[in-house]
Image (cartoon, helix red, strand yellow):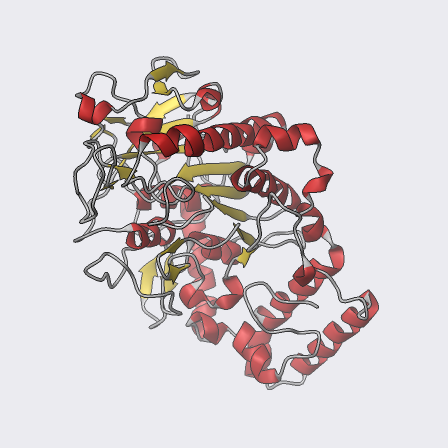
Length: 482
């Protein structure tokens, strides 16, 4: 049965005309027809303004590796061996392929792959009021601060008025040229307590631009019934139904037909092509990879998810977001990087060994395949961890060896598309508490992602109230390019 990604509506039994308009009309985007054509013209002008700039339009696709919970930068990417004991922690630094740059002993494989990327040590922002995971995730992925934050730092559930996540904007502005899924999120949405997927949906763009969410463990056999024709529906029958749909559209009044020309026909046409071509199904088939490759990535949810991310990009998917498979405020021994209760044991025994193997494998594999030439890889969490152990910085209780949330200074990895390889960008102070130079706001990193894809971060979009807004409240960091 054909299920359009991001919608619960089944089309094999035939959607109503109202369903078609709701799914595809430009009105869903908060645009009337005149605004739509005006927006198209402005978009073209903004791109022309940046054409030829260093790094602009250097990427065709993006893998966003989101490490939910806030990894401890000081225990992974930015060790401080000369800091006091209650800051430096238990791990020793080791040398890397970047001369003069050390990382934690828990990341020996990544130490040998840092020559393929830039290590950013100056990510930083100051939140408004009490900060927690959901608010930080929303800002990181949408480029906008949340409108409403509860006293606990939690946000309200996702809303159609939310600012779209980056992958949704990208799948709209840079749709794939192949019949593949434009935006895939693995293995499930980000979650904090009962708030699921905040900052990870299309918001005011409309559900047509929501990510395709797998909701499965890539380390287990993947079922793809929603990308497969039912046995009783032949390819020819599917094509006949699409022809009938186009005929219905052709009989509509001129305005509705004009809207459909830019939305419904294209949207459903791509959906039919997606199912009939089988290319997306093949991308999800990890059995096509050798045991050696699968073992190199690690037989874990995260490891096989990164391998699947590479396969999806190879197939033509524009944006893949691979989430650390956990929930915030969960058990740090098995869940996220949220190490309030215990920091060193889960990092040493679980988190870092998995991250080290899988992320190093992704960079090594993509480099060998030549995929880093036009694929941007970003690995980041919503914030770092407090340099001092056992203190409360966000209203949470922390064990003596636990670290609290810390958005004022943390680290990220970026690679590909001409970004400097084997480089360090920015530096933190003696305790990794704040940037010493080149501070980078997460909005600036997100603006850099758009910029690399040939999208002007300053371009205007219309929100749910038809108000013009910048695509992201940040500026691209051109200094990342060598």
